[in-house]
Structures are given as C-alpha cells and as structure tokens.
Image 1 (cartoon, rainbow, N blue to C red):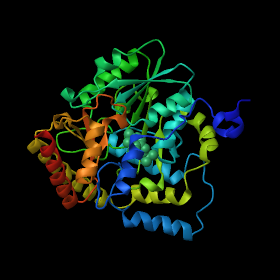
Image 2: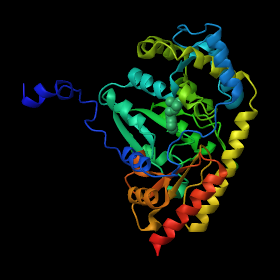
Image 3: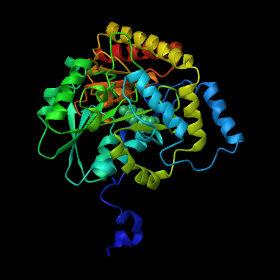
Image 4: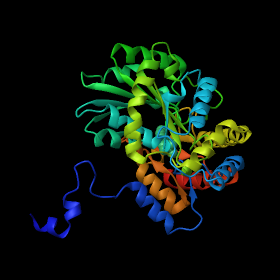
Length: 396
Ligand SMILES: Cc1ncc(COP(=O)(O)O)c(C=O)c1O
C-alpha cells in the first residue's frame, strides 16, 4: 500500500469511473457570483416560475391522505395512464400503461437506460453540443460517447450525414435531443424522418430525449421519432415535468418504449431508487390531468423573452442558431474578441450577468455561449443592457 492510500484510503480506491476533482468552470462562475451583488443569473436551466398551485395542492393532499408509501416501481398506475394518454394526444405515439416507467427526473431514466443497454466498448452517438450527463452515464457503464456535432449554419439541427460519418460496427445507440440543450435547436420533421431511415439501416437503438418538446415556438415543429413508421420498436422516448411544468425539484420524469424491453427495466429501476417520491407522483398526475393554462402562459412568457433576446443579439451583431424550442439561445460571442469562458467571466465580473460557456456542453470551439431566458422580462432587459455595455467596451 502506498502512503497516499494509507492517508486517504477512500480516494485512493475510487473506481476509474469517477473524475478526481471538482473544478468545473460552472463551479468557478458560481463562486465568483457568490461574491458579487445583484447578479442576473441566466446560466442554469431551472425555470424562474413556481410550480402551478393546483399541482402543489395535489402533493399536499397526497401527504395529508397518507399517500407516502412505496408505489409500484414503475410508478402509480394512474400516472402511467395519464402519461400514455398525453403522449398519444400531444405526439401521436401510443403506449400502454406497462410500457411507461416513472423515474426521478429524466436524469434517472438516462442512467437506467445506459445500465440496460451498454456493454463495454459500445458506442453511443449523441447530439452535440450536449447535455453531458449522457457522456457520464455512457462512460459509467464502459461505453464510448461519440459526439455528433451540429452547426450554426444548420440552425444546430442534427444532420444525418454527420451521424453517418461516425457510425462504426460498435455503434449501438443514437441519442437524439430535440429541442436540444444548449442550442434550443429543433430538428425539423423531414430531417427526423431521414434520421429514422438511417437508424433502421444501421440497426441503431434511438433514445429520444423530448424533455423540451412542450416548449416549441413559432417557426418550429416537433416530430417524435417514435411516431415515424418502423421506429416504435427501436425507440425509447424520454420526457418529464421539470421544464414544461416548472417542476425541477420534484424529480419526476419518465421513459416509454416497447413492452418486451420496458418490462426488463422494472427490476433495475427498483434497484436505483425503488420509486419516484410518492407525493411528487401525485403532483405529476395533477400536472397532466389538471388545467393546462399555466403551462401555456409560461410558454408564452418564454416566447416573449426569447424575442427580446433575439432582438438584443441582432442589435449587437452577434449571431445564433434559430432557437425553435426550449429556453436557450446559443450565441456566437467570438466577435467580443474573447473565447467564450473568458467572455463569461468578464461579463460576470464587469456586468454581473451570469451565462455559461459552450465548453460546459462539450463544445470545445470556445465560440459559443448559452443564454437561458429564465428571468422576468424586466431583468432580461436589464441583463441585455449590461451585456451590450460589456461587449461594446471590449470590442472597441
Ligand atoms: C436534455 C436534457 N435531458 C434531461 C435533463 C434532466 O432533466 P430532469 O430534471 O427531468 O432530470 C435535462 C436538464 O437540464 C436536459 O437539458
């Protein structure tokens, strides 16, 4: 045994699956922000709206009614029924109750799926820039993440040729995220059909992360790849409540797929956390079966903020890909003369606006910065003014 191991036996024996240090640039920005007054946070993907009251009330009622025991590991049957009905109504995809598993956010669905699908050496193609949880989950099970780049010239849509160029005999899974985080890109229906054709030809499993599909704006259209002919049997759809219903902290998401495979996931799902917190499941049930006007009001508020952000970037001459969905703008900030991480740090220190660089989303070009519009309109207006002043100062 070496001296280091004797002094720190846990750290010395950690598995190769975890990284040793936590020095992410995100942490650095958060620490700088903590020492500043009046920072306008437009970094994280957490809605500023509160969860609609009728959803909160449903959870309270569940607690008072002693609905706080274990549920079926796949989730409350009534919730799974409501999820299946919602998927049929909104996306034209049809699942039975036992083809749905409720998880602790989409996050847990991602882990569960990689656990169930990945053998060492399997390659997973992932829409990029990307939500890097996918990389971590793939690596945790010995797989190899293969980012598939998207480009501003295509409005960051996932292009079939870019996927095809990266297919090898080890390719097993394609992770399609549309609308995407961090770009807000919606891959158009005709391109989704081409990707479906490619997935069938190359025998790829598709994980379709549609967590932002309820947030689509004028000029964009969402098509679930599971709705394309011949795709249901090779697709798992992921969705949840965090973004559409401002429910990030409740931790409810779900997966839906063909029965033969989904039934095999129930035991490993039990192994991870038994079931999603029961009051949260009742909240999610109310979210789907109750009034939807609060959801539409949030979407309209996001649409107004998005328009303001686009106007502000146009006025500054900073380009971006057309953001068809989600609540992000992915902006080329290289005209500031700074790489994106330096720009984010400068903007935070001098302008007290917090944004996240593309490098946090696996984009090593250092050209792009993600701006989330999860602040009230007047705060976004103030942030855009501060940003313009910092940009003009450094561009001069
Ligand atoms: C693309 C994508 N998938 C999944 C998640 C995780 O969401 P949840 O809160 O449902 O775990 C996020 C969160 O930001 C995301 O952006």
